[in-house]
Amino acid sequence: MKKQIKSIAIILCLFIPVVIQAQEIVAGYSLGYGKYLLGDLKTMQEKSVEGVQNIFENYKSTETFPEGLFHDVSFGVKFSIHEIGLKYDYLTSGGRNHLADYSGEIKEDMIASGDALGLYYKIHFLSFPLNNHFRLTAHAGVATGAIYNKLNDKRFFTLYDPKPHYSNFYNDRFINYNTEFDEFDEFDETVKFRSTNWYVQPNIGVQLEFKNTVFLNISAGYLFDNQGKLQTAYESTIENIEILVPYVSSYTYYYQYNTPGKEYNAGIDWTGLRLSVGIGFAFSIAK
Image 1 (spheres, rainbow, N blue to C red):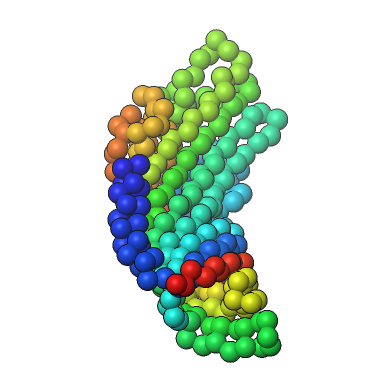
Image 2 (image 1 turned 135 degrees about the vertical axis):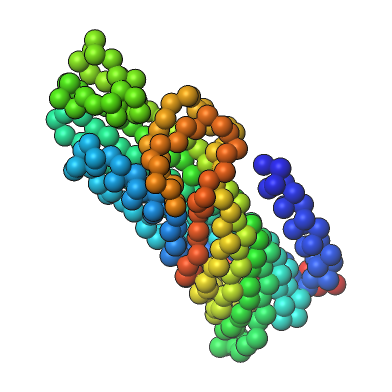
């Protein structure tokens, strides 16, 4: 949280002097479609499946961090053909591993999300009127800032009549097995991770303006993400139990998450194409 507050303060300090020279205030919302690289998370998921398949061969991935929709909110100022402002994006994707039948269920949900906060700049390099009310403009620009990532790795496991599946894997590694019961107690654990990335996103687009007040915007860009390393979150409720979570470049399947703040050789990489369409409003503040 301290990193987020510090970043917001720096961005506002850079933004405030520009507002003084502004001729218009602009605000907008866009809904977009993004492709995400997320290579480390996909590798983590693959290794997690491989580890469990040693016991349950039908265990598999049913969702593998697909691309999807993102939300974009912007607030800025415009003077002449230049526009500069603040930009916030919300990104999310997830993976699921699952197996269920009459004997029980085992499931893992890995949900990744990113809050991207930064500055953007646009230059409206082309503008021509269509009639007395509508104007078409073209713009190019760049955005840069920080992405504050969250990864929640949630595991659920229950097994009915576990005696045929008994092994040291469960007894020593996975869960506290008790032979006095005919059923495993339900195991439900969420391990939380955090990381911070820095990104740069060039883009280009066109804008249809109505009376210089309301505009529709279509844009395309590409986000380049410099990913940071995941750390175990301090707010996690973590017991002294070994959980099956493999990591990139590691041949050991078991990690003990009882050290908040521990850093791992893996990150959340949102690199990829961005396409969006949105609506915005402009208000004149010219003196």
